[in-house]
Image 1 (cartoon, rainbow, N blue to C red):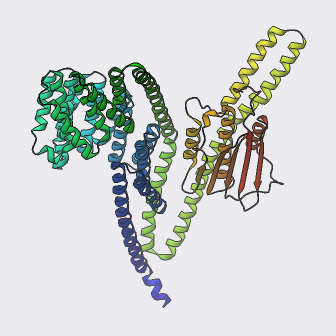
Image 2 (cartoon, rainbow, N blue to C red):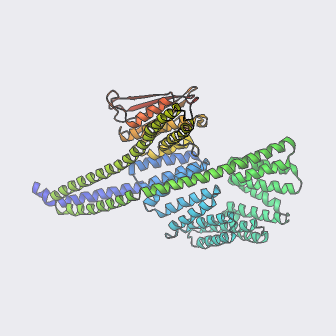
Length: 631
């Protein structure tokens, strides 16, 4: 019996391998079907603006990724997070999640997804009036989409470039891009998408001439679209755009005979389709129509309707136009109220647009920086994957050759790669630790030693009545102290406390290290002193690092709470814990203890071996009443 098994072992092993392979193929097929189903469901939630459906589909995608470790699923997960933030008009978060999805798609060489994410990023930048940024990202998207002949999405990229060129007053460039879009649109194989794309581009071309005051030429394009086969029934959205633009151009050159009926027809279509954002445009046009014919009552009505829909959909351009209309159509205090609201909104939008541009640039810079830092690691990983593939091939040949040789070879390969992986990880960890240690040492040395020596020298100069020199030395001492804090601190001037914490958690969150945050959204952190927020941020960062690095935790809970006199931070992990009576605090916790005491707060660490660690920090809200907030 034993001789029989030894003789036919390679054949039996081959049959078993084929069975496992077929099982894997079946699992992969099931995963692909489930992934496609969840993606369709999530996209439906986005197009219907149903955040509940979108979040549910995304949560299930994350669970599927946990089971399969399929990077393409993770890329879709970040895409849906971006779409969710886009629905709630949180552009900077949407921008960041689009970038994360694009980076994963790039790593797995999914050019179509990477190009589509870049197109979404470009659209966000255009909406934020970051036209140059949108132009750059659109051209980058073409580098991904054109080589794979993704005509459907390439059309949208050229369309976006046309719109951006129009906004930059580069009309010749805009026409050139629109014509490229038309040419590419003809290459589509899906008839419906081809027709929709054609109508969209024709409308944009007409709108371009309309903005230049060339209404006759604009009308020719609008009419060209409106005579398209059965357009009103098949493509009501495009029909409404074309008809409204036609009415606007006719109204602009004094041909007002059919204008009112055309606007009313557009209004009916958009109400039926629930196109609320575009309804604000139609009501503005109707208000302007009635203004021209001195019908103040109807002009006011449509201006108010435009204002309502503009606020509802964050259509800032129409919002401003509605307020301007109402300030002109009303009198007295009411007119002043609308005018003041117009001025305030216009100023705030300008600030918001500038802030968004800066935020986009920052995210873009940080993404590029991380990609450069990871270039070496990516190269090592590719080499390692190539070696693993080679060894797998050798392993398969070995199994067919002899069972005993395979076992020895397999064990040797497994030991070799485990050892290699461990050494690479340890080397990488040591480099990170060395950089962090060096930064902390410099900061501590500046703060504790250099600043301390300067303080003693300052006292000696004062005792010697060298007051002028003492004053200058005091300035130097303050500069040294500020520098030390900059090395180990964080600023909330450009990025809010909430966003800093969210970014921090996002940086450390992994599938085997889950972080839950509570209490962050419930409070107005702008009322809290920066020094307290800085301490909370550094405390959170130190605890996350300790839980992940030393405690071997897989779950971490961060809870913020504000009372009348105190702010509380409680951080709990499920790590291995430690004996607080034996273990000494490291320099990180020592520095943290000092920072807490500086703010008259308390730091309590409760831990037991095997039962995790709980860190409690309590800071009085008036801790810095008599302190310098910049130190």
